Image (tube, rainbow, N blue to C red; front, side, top):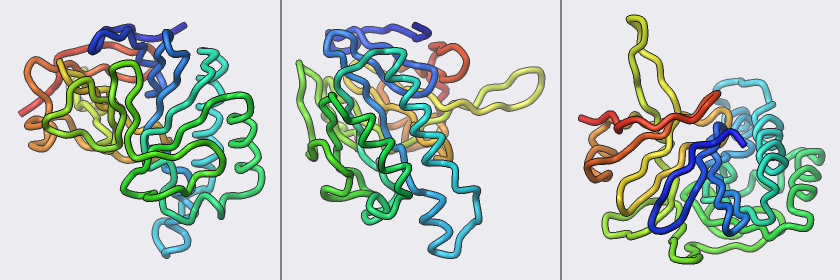
Length: 221
């Protein structure tokens, strides 16, 4: 499997090229910030007219990761839907694909700031989940230990051949792990922002997504 394996709070985890996180000992695939239905929500509010393929492509990415890992449990770390009501408004084909992915698996939706309350179809819903020593929630805290979260959509800016490139990335220090956004049209916050530079303790690593996940020192202020 193409992944970057690392140890976090006593667990061996695998950062996937897609931005998903696989925990082999728990057969658990963790994804964050899918923002399903984002294009539909923007169109409804009169925003940018983007091709309505974001949900289809994000679900395809999820299908590929489930096939590659064989995960029997899926944990979505919040902002799985771009707004509270958008889950019920997804096209029938997309809702059927979600139901197919859930079939035979333990599926858990964690509440985010975009999708407060139970708004995902099927599965279980919670605000925070503690599993085998790790705590899963949407937004990182300053005093969390063994904490896995999302929300910030971290991206690392690098320079190659005289030009800047940006890559979504995982951020990890001794006590917290932040996942990149899994949704294909999600934006991002640069790791050298004041917010992420203050939140992540030194030394912290950024695990870049892409063709092959690579760990580098976290670019920061």
